[in-house]
Length: 146
Length: 81
Image 1 (tube, each protein chain N blue to C red):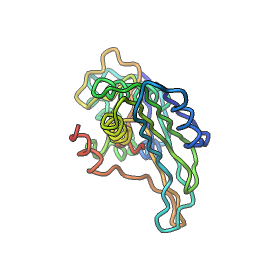
Image 2: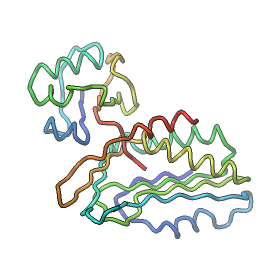
Image 3: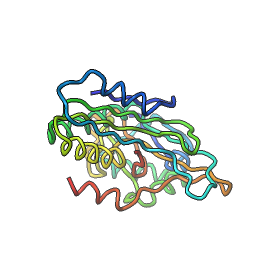
Image 4: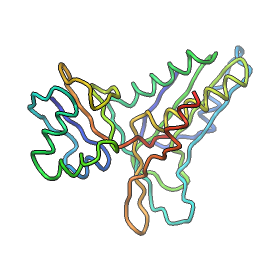
C-alpha cells in the first residue's frame, strides 16, 4: 500500500505502469485519475488546502477499510495539494486484485471516501474571484452505498 | 489546547491555528465559549451543521468530550478527490 500527499505534479501513466510492473499474483488493475475541471473556460486555478497532520492517516484508514472489504493485493493513492491549473491531475487511485469486481469496487469505494472523509478543501479562482467548493449532498449519500 | 481552522473557517477567523486555554467539557462548549469572545468566531460558528470537527486528527462530533484532547480542528465538509 502506498499513500502519497504532495504538491508536485505526477504522471498518472508512469505511476500506473510502476504500480503494475512485475506483478504475477493479480488479474485486475483498476485506476482512476481526478483532473482539475474547467467546464466553461473561466477557471484561473484551483487551490487545494489540507490538514497535514491528519491527511495521510485518514487516507491510510480508508485504505485499511477497503482491504477488509475486498481481496486487494495492493493499493496506490496519490493526492496533491497547493495551486493547480486546469487540466492538471489532482489525484489518482489504483487497486490490484485477483479479479476485476474487487478492483473496481474498491477503487469506487476509495473515491467516495477520499472525496468526503479525507481532509482536503478545494478553492476555485475565476475572473469573478475565489470561492470554496461546497460539498454536495450526493457526496455524503454516496457513502451509504457501502 | 491547539485549535486549528481550515478553508473558509480559517479565513473567517483570520488565523490558521492558536493556543486556547479553556475548561470547556465538550466541543460544543468550546464553540459557545469562542463565539462569545469575538464576532469573527460567532460568524464562523454561526451554523455548526455546516462544520466538521477533528480531535487529535480523528473525525469526531460536537458532543464529544475534550478531556485529554491536545488538538481540535474545525473545518467545512471535505472536498477531496
